[in-house]
Structures are given as structure tokens and as C-alpha cells.
Image (cartoon, rainbow, N blue to C red; front, top):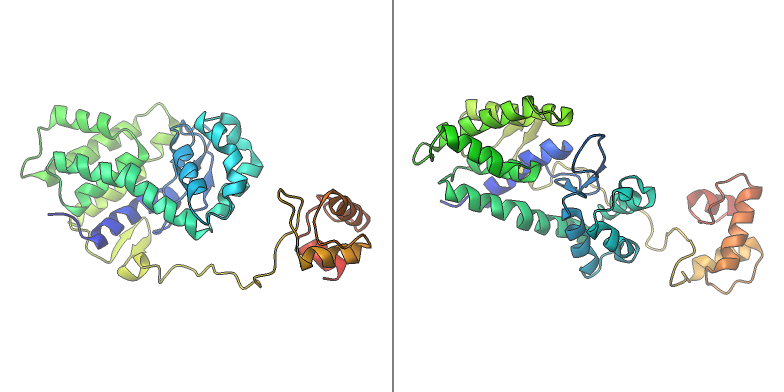
Length: 306
């Protein structure tokens, strides 16, 4: 029988906890661990630069209507397509990714992306093995996100035949097989990932095959309220709609806020943030011992008395 929507969200939340420490994931999380073959990882369930999946996600986002940072991220698409390792330490790129995580368009893109790239294939692989319990599918989904599902599936099948009607025994054997592989891996980072299998072992021992709520996974409680977002911090901004950071861009930023800055700087107040305005801002920031980057943010606005 197909999983319910609540079981699906519970399974995904378990993997989100493994990846980001949060049941609903962290859409803006950017991670780079020394020795990680995936290189830079990003988003709710941490998709990777090296696999090419980060390129697919950002391409989806840049093509989506209303994507706030599409213009800023689009120039990176050729480098993402080539899995350019220099992006690992590109602070501007990493900052854009982090900022995009707050965009509801990015969040929707990630939800659809992780369903398409990981969840749907996981359900298909599980079905082929007659694995239809919520915890069974969660185990497969975790391996799809984390990697090496097929290798561990085949290694388990070599010692334990197709599960048939005894999927619980087979899934427990799979978890044990994967744990042993992780624990003995030559990659020290993967050896530290045995916690994922230990968490599944705890759920197996508790008989949580249907993923009944509430559940606690690695100290994080899962409940319907948590999965519905009721327990998540509200991140809505209280800033006025007109508040924005002013900078040189293409096309030029324009408006009354630009004109107000120009007036305070004593330059022509045409309302367009061009090179002359940027140069005047840098001069002002330098004279006031501010970061001289030509960007008018809260500290520069305060110094200007705006």
C-alpha cells in the first residue's frame, strides 16, 4: 500500500535531520567539509556540486518565475554545469546560495527537486524489492540522498535473498551491512556517518515500521505540528517593503531611496545608482571609517542620517 503523505514527510524529515539537524531541513545551508567527495553541498537535503545535481537545482531555480536571485545566480550556471571546484570557496557564490534559501521560490524548487531526484526513485527501488513499510522506504531514501544505494543493496542481496514477505529482516540486514561499510570506509568522513544507521537501528528496535508520530530522531522530536511547520521559527522580515541595500548593478537601481542618498552625499540627485554614486559612497565610507565597498546598507544609511 502506498505511503500516506504524513509518512512521506516523516521519512523525508528523518533524512533532513541527518543532513541539516532540522526536521524541515535548512534550505539555505551551504556546507563544505574537507575530504568530502561531493564537495560543496547545499539545501534542504544537501545536494552536491560534484554530482552535478547542484547545477540541476540552480538551473530549475533560475528558470522559475519570480526567483529573486535568478539574475545573480544565472552567470554561475556554466561553472556549475562543469562542476567547477573553484565554486567551493567562492564566497560571493556561497553567499548567494545562502540568501536564496529564504526565497519561497527556492524552497518550492528544492521540494520539487528532491522529490524528483531522490524520493521518487527511492520509492521505485523500494517497490522492486517489495519494501512498502514507511521505515523501509525511509532507509532506501536515505541511501539515495547519501549515496551508494545500489552497491549496498547488491551487497545485502548477496548475503540475504529478496525479502519477499519478510521485509523487516531484510531491511535490518541492509542497515547492518551499510553500517559495517561506513564504519570500515577509507574515507574518515564516511566513518563518522554511522550515526545514520544507528538512528535507523533505534527505530527498528522500537518497531516504528509505520513511522508513527511522535518519534524522536537524534534528539529531534517529530510530530504532526513539527512537520506542518508550526514548531519552526517564523522568519518573516519586519523590514518595510521599501528597505533595500543599494549598490551598483545592471540594470541600475533607481528610486527615491537612491535620490535621498545622493542628496546626503551632495551629488546630482538623479535617482540612479551609477558609477558616480558608487564612487561618492566609497569616499564617504572611507572618511567615516566604514567598510569602503560602495554598498549602502544599514551602517552607511545610519552614518548618512537616513
